[in-house]
Amino acid sequence: MADIAIIGGGAAGAAVFGELLRRADHGGTVHWITGGAAPGRGVAYATADDRHLLNVRAAGMGLFAEQKGEFLQHASRHLGHAQGSDFLPRRLFGEFIEAQLRTRIAEAHARGRRFQVHDTRAAAVRRQPQAGYHVELENGAALATDAAVLAIGALAPRPLKTVSMQVLDSGAYILGPWNAPEPPRPPRRVLVIGTGLTAVDTLISTAARWPKAELIAVSRHGLLPFRHPAAPVAPYPYQDDLNAALLACDGAAPMTRLVREAIAGVAGTDWRAVVDGMRPINATLWQGFTLAQRRQFLRHLRWVWEASRHRTAPASYEIVQELIESGRLQVQGARVLAVDGSGPIAVTLRCRTTQLTSTIEVDRVIQATGLDTAVAYARDPLLAQLLGAGLATPDPLQLGLAATPDGQLLDAHDRAQPGLYGIGSLLRGNLWECTAMPEIRIAASRLAQALTEDGETRSEEAAAN
Image (cartoon, rainbow, N blue to C red; front, side, top):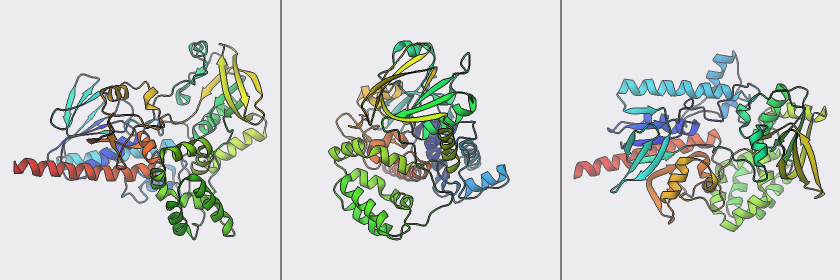
């Protein structure tokens, strides 16, 4: 096997690292550059708040593709009992990732498998003259590798363009909802920008942290995620036929009509079963869109698709509904036109339905807009270096990095870079659905297999020469 560098310490990086450790050793070293955070947890599973729940049932969660029920067994040992249909704390899955890594590392040690974990960040990746890559680390070390995998996960959030420097300097505008500092006094009114899954967790934590605070959540459409049913629903009986018809469609509009007809055509059909049954073909559907069709989907359907596809756990949904019914939480569909001041903060909104403009005063603003994949505007030094060197290029719609269907990154001239891959959120422009663990674990297995086969080919060629 060739020397391989995995850059990124979150769940996607952990999955690739563990898959490579399990495969046969042909003399190469697997380097995992974790970035200094708790290996495997990343942003998604680093939370310590047990009210932050997974939005996939326990039976569907795992770190490696071959796992069947290991997370459920882990949860049962730690909780006393757990069922496959449960939506468990994300903290618990983070602990499971760490346990799985310890096991894989111990097995690798026993077999003499060569690997190294680097508790630092990657500063640069440069193409070597003949083949492979030179990976420079922030601690001054450098690695000569045959392949490199970018698994850096969610980018650091950027403030909205409408936020003034005065607000940012005040400390009352929070970019990272997971580690918000305690203010001098409890806020009376908190505005959360966003209404997706990140916003749901933020609202739940904020409501508990400041039980007397009034909460406002705002997004352009004002649509909260739909809820998972308490128990799994029966599969849609004609899903295979529907998926075949969807694959034959030209664009999102006819696909939407087919999905609506399927839901209405069979009595008792739960729409969530139809949406979930599309999961195996979502990436293929997306890759079949033209650039114009992708742009049309993002403009007209993205908001309702994400609320339908990325649903919230029943318990989380009920907490948010109780906040709304009690009058503590208002959810608005509006565009944020301006955020200014230092205390109180003046937030100017334009209502989606009436187009009327209004200004409200709040004590604290928390930006919880979720995944940012606009790499061209990111403040990540490694991405800036890769783009500047022409080794990578942004997706045309700013959904990550441009890549081939199998995840090889494209350079500034749209040429696939041999041995340079992405996984996870960086491939959203290429795959659309690529950030949930069920997709990541399959992608990690396929990528590890491809890297292993590439390494074996290089070894054979070297031996022949």
